[in-house]
Length: 365
Image 1: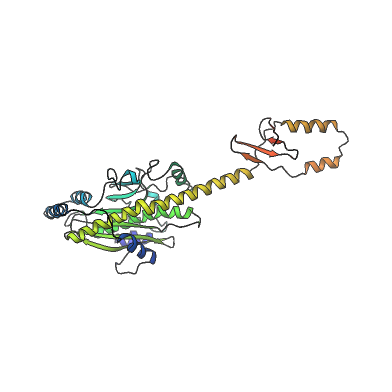
Image 2 (image 1 turned 120 degrees about the horizontal axis):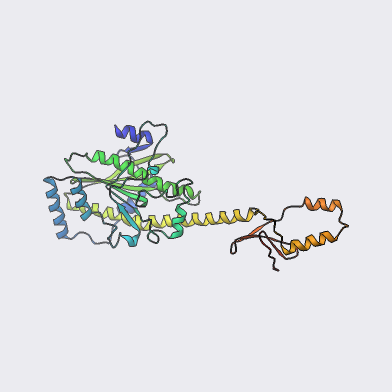
């Protein structure tokens, strides 16, 4: 009942594998997931060792055994992997609770989505100059008005997650692949929300295709899912492939598609996010500059040298009429400009002098 109540009442839907996919999702599968690769495959000796370990797991195993086997043979470790490691900006977590603010929650629903804790989750490092520059990390703090670290999916700082994996043990006591699929549905919806907030901040300038991938696997079968969001409300998860791990051909294909997902994450997707953050940063700076120029500065009452000259002239000219004074009082306020170098406002006078809002300073242009 968890799928019908907790997931669907919060707009998360697990679709049948034979349901027609949206065009953008179908294109992603054909162009990215199933693309051919030039990277080395497992050698004959490595494949023989993998099949032997699978035979050992069949005699009895738990989730930790399955996770260890697949981490050694299928999923690279971003902490040390030369291709999918720190140099690529990737980061992974294991069984870390995902941030509560990313989890869908319909206020009208009495049922809640359990806080996802994927057995493995891939995203990007929050360390400076790994996945993102310092300005790009700064831009991330502006994506949500109340939550500065909105893209962070874990307490370790993993940003913009895109790949969640759940492990089970066939015949184990802690659930099967049905349960793992439900867990993938919750985790993938949180992944989508992080990217959705980035798209919202672009204000129509451009839009990044918001898809993510999940795998539910035991020591017999691995099921590959893709997830996407529609109408800014509904989250969909659909199985797009399955692999019998006992088959060397399936095992190779499974490994290839996992690396295709990670390759897309570290290249195409990461570059799209970087470009979007650069756009947001530029827009934020432009708005701040325009706001500072149009804002009248507080005047502290101190006089400039040009003010003193005008005040002296005013005292010496007793013939000024009341009507002229009235025109002066009703005159339009001067336009103030901001000097970012010395961080002070100034007004350009008709005689070429500058009137500064603070202190006494004037200069010929």
